[in-house]
Length: 385
Image 1 (tube, helix red, strand yellow):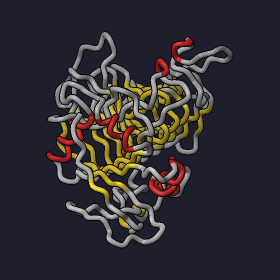
Image 2 (image 1 turned 30 degrees about the vertical axis):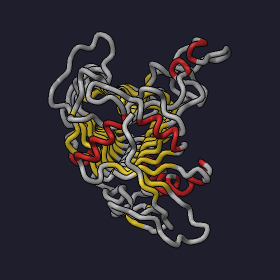
Image 3 (image 1 turned 45 degrees about the vertical axis):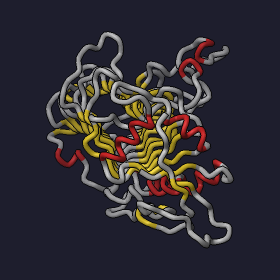
């Protein structure tokens, strides 16, 4: 396992603009440039984009408690704007209905083959201002899908992959979105039978909040949450990862990949990783996650911070602070502000929302402990590039 380059810095709560300050929640809708459009309805779950530039206006429409895939979208390039897809899969749902995955009788909520929306359009699709909760996958790209842009969307309580691309053929861009309590982030591990691996694919994650979560039951009851990336050693896309905040821990699943790939990452800056577990658990996570590009998460992180200035700053929960207090200080205010300024979070978009205050100043490249910290101020270990 690689040695961790760490410095202890005593911080006393200075506000500064966070990585999520850029971007407006009231940017122009893709509906504005749609050639044709239709209004969605709760009675319709299958939408065809029969002509290029078609738009579906789902603002104010809610689909509730639908098993399997809730919404299907297929056809030409188009725009999906707004809507709420609220699934039935509870905290204790199971991957499949077997004891291996935690099922012990009664109603079986098996999430493995479920998604809020499945995309079949063979050309690019924009999904904006959409809210998806309580499914296995959030956005599922079928084999015949095209590239997808997901922006200003709220995807939460997802037991499997937040965005799933199992075919090795699509590019995915996520912008200004909230992934709250999701098991796995971006999945591009090809399923058996998928042989394609197109060159030029890009996975971009920008200006977003991502909270990885271990649900009551997981795949084969493995410990910890999944990875930020569910990668494919033989089919890596290009990665662009900028201005995000990630919440992980207290235990990450063994072998899961948490950082973009060595040699395949072309942009990486201003990302913050909040680790709500112990320093020991964090270092254990760094020792796992090997893939074809690197032997561990730690090696990936080391390369990223060497290759890109200010790529990741890691903040580990202090030993004397409770997890609840750590979240209240570091994570909850960011989520609350995102929700208050985005329609998908139930808030009111503003032309130029104020940046989320960050209680930590940007660490100095060669910090030294504050010689006289304010009494009672939190003493925060920060792991620097």
